[in-house]
Image 1 (tube, rainbow over the protein chains, first blue to last red):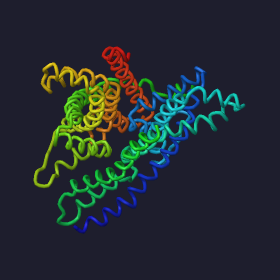
Image 2 (cartoon, one colour):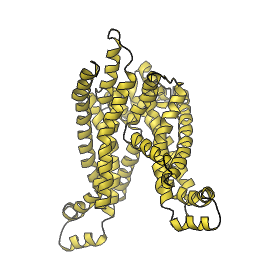
Image 3 (tube, rainbow over the protein chains, first blue to last red):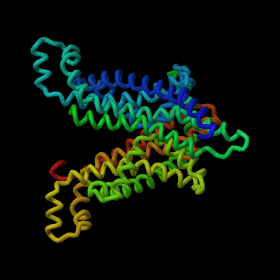
Image 4 (cartoon, one colour):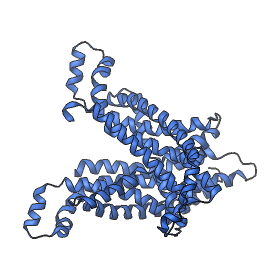
Length: 223
Length: 227
């Protein structure tokens, strides 16, 4: 193996993979929490609330993720009233989280509505209020149906963390690209573009493929 | 009111022609990408559903590789790695890179959409076609495609909208589409709030209009008993 491979792999694994994982974990946890709450609230028969959540879902699902991240990272600091600058990683987490929470909210709404009405009625007959009914009876059942889309979301969010490289987060793609640039200046070096881009593809494939298989497996098992 | 007062509406108004130019490039690339992914989806989806040897296996590998790697990396691969392919460098025009990379992505997702659609056509329909003396190809054209294609329609629509949204990532290789136009405008005007607000609204108008239009077509094409 050529000498350059060791340091590049080291940099991509310790700096790049670490940042990719950090963004993906926070974005998925945030989207799951916000998405489940919004999706459950959407099943309430209260029109203004439903309309508001529908707007949230359609806006963040309609915008390309790169535009959402640019809005959060570039537009908010000079926005009237807000004037807040996020760090690059926080900006990426919020951008991906807005998109992810919209996806989870839509999936949750479907999962909650797929629980038979008798379950609601039985829980109500036992004296549960709306919150208790959802927390103890409806959501535990809906979560089983939600698990496959959540695993797919994790795979998608991991892939989309690459967009964070465009605002300067050194994740897997950016660390690979920086390595290509650095190696250009080594004496007697030839281009490493092809090898490193192929390695980036391979790295993402190895992370994502087991997750998409798991999602398919869970869908067959649980639904 | 302070919110509206400090927002420079005049700036957006003055730069509508720039946004329009970017939007035209976005729509052009998206149109080619969508048409191409439709063709790829029907061809490879049919090969997968009919288990045609070799083609079907290669299509499966293509689908898995594209679906499990980020589209941004795929764009950089076409733009930045292929020109350095050892022994056989491939250099493409920026416009070719643009439509090719979004088309390859959409084609992979569409192959799955159409495979599932064609496989959902009951086997006895195909048997009936063959029994009437249609060749396998004619049976596909007259039976499997019209029914399976319509079953695949809703999921393929989502793919087309994603293809349009994915063209925004071409800004990373400096292709002058809508997002890149906004990015350049921001770097000379230092008005990120106005520029990206206008950008977001433009995308929402385009994406929502496109989904409404396609759903209109879908309701016209839907299989009657399911409508």
